[in-house]
Length: 228
Image (cartoon, rainbow, N blue to C red; front, top):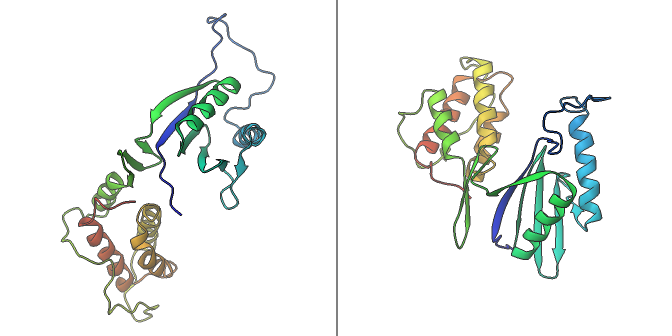
């Protein structure tokens, strides 16, 4: 079952300010911000609060919190000190914001347009997610911004193997390209198969493997507006 989120919004933590003593500086007994354990301490504090509010932690993604109310649902995704959330019910969004602001110093940034490299367009009947800006940067980085367009990410006759007799290519460059393409699969499941296929040969990439990845870039050149 697919449920349409009415709105996807964005919360962010504010820096601490003492409005009664704006010119004063606090001497900390122990600094937490910037330390390795800071994200863990913050997550534990936040998750404890959300669980007390009736949210359930996701099974596969522990930074995802879910709450059901009859036929409605609200999803809360935490990324360090940024939080995105969406619900099928406007009142559940308002209740979440009110609860968070009563417990933490937070600012409401409104509807989400851009988050972790994802471009988000919120329309009346749907939410469209893409990585068009990232595509363009990736094509330019690997000198493929002027390449010809291809309709499919892999040829039906393509049979990739280890290609022991093939000519080796720059391993770091190949791995960098594979890593960039794997990041794109967040909004482009259509390239998942071929990217994972090419990722098998990162230990000793050959020209045949690199040509297969270049074909993916040519496919992206003609499908920049594709997303979820």
